[in-house]
Image 1: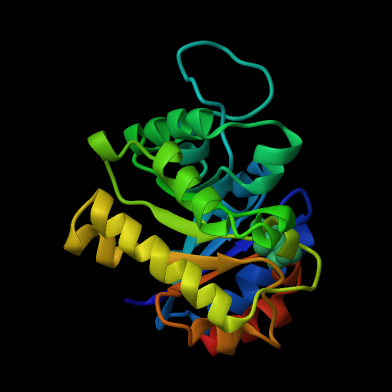
Image 2: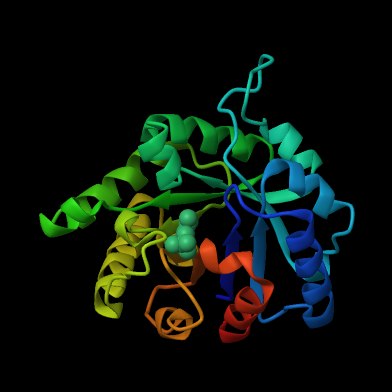
Length: 245
Ligand code: PEP
């Protein structure tokens, strides 16, 4: 499977950053890996007007869970699709922890994203206390089982394993620890779906992934790509990580 390298600009990003991405990606036209760029909703529209499929794909960050009414705040999947997105990051720890989003709510968003033809990148990950208490796999497996409607799968999805304590901290688990979690996620997905689907669902690692550690992480069995926050805010850095992949 090709590696998937996703840049999550979070609430950063700017037209300048977008322009630097477009100019870099138009030169390298990455085809050895799948590149997904996830800016804020307003920048999605800005980028889409200048975007080409050769650059990779656009992704959104989060959406409202219901598209039946006018709602304040978050965009709807329809709006996101109209701005060219193919992927959507859901259940990011910022949403789960800072906005009290439950896995049940994430599941509603995943279902809605599928209805609109988007591919959800579902984020899961343990807090440092969970890891110290040997609860990592219980937390991660529970978030996966509850965030995705495995009885009624309606489209492809991606899992991003992002230990909460690793995000933005400069600290990452050891390669062995990443491998253990990813192996267990792979087993869980095969159990909850089947060998083909569970075996071919991309499993990304996220949390302080950078040029220094990208190659080592990508070499771990059952790691099929990276979700990159801070290091995606500079196209040189992000471009080097694409090269590693
Ligand atoms: C993220 O916020 O999803 C993330 C992975 O951030 P960082 O790479 O900065 O740790």
